[in-house]
Image (tube, rainbow, N blue to C red; front, side, top):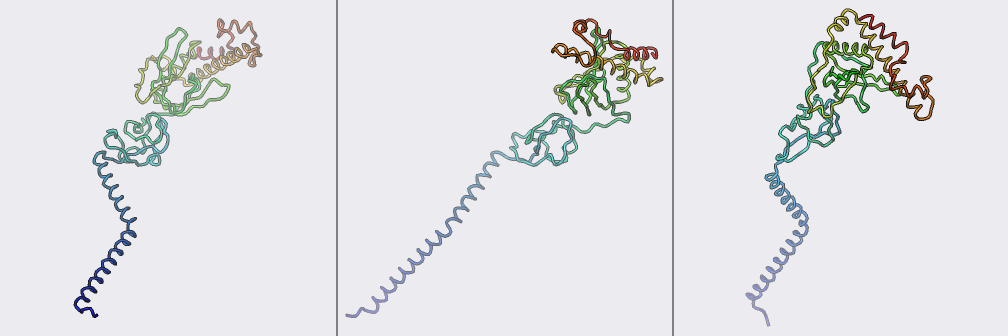
Length: 315
């Protein structure tokens, strides 16, 4: 029995269409499988971009600068000390530095740790140095034990009767040198002509009045503390003598250094004898030690007396 040609063509067309459909479906399936990873990555990227845009709209970010390393008060800010970072605009300080040029070359007001956002309140510009500013060094000022270069101090004078005056106010310590077993530490300060004369007058006064002390007091928070008012009244007669005979100041410094040294040696011997050892600077015994506080200054040495007599004769 023969199949009619018309029916045969219908069956053949159906089978052909079924084969093409199956081929397309199978090809589409394999194409989907081969591009699934790409589609997933594109979907993730799109989702992340949408999330980032939503976050930025809710929490807008701005460019700021932070410190790469710790900085101390008094240090100069260099461009290598800063690095850019992003921070939420809502929490950025109003005076945050937005440009490196705003901070480079400025001086730190206080100690700062790394990764701290740089603000204008943290630094100040280099002060304009007056023509009469000089770098002076002194070895007759008693310094605090923890004093460091870059700290700020008041220089004061205290007399035996308890009177205490401020000679210099809020001076930055440019440099200092400490030597073991020495009391006359050296300190360097920037001084104007008026401050130099004021300090010279105080040195002469301290050398004339036995028991007077020149000492430094350190500021706790110099960036927010105002300078103290100077209360020391410069001796006009001494200032006139200083102008006519500058050697008076040198002799006064020598007198104070000798006095400080003798006092240092006595106190060292006192500590050694109290610990059961023999004094190393003199023949101090226990009897002398018991009278030390009562007769302080009586055995100050011929050199000290001669220096004071010489100074008094000049005055």
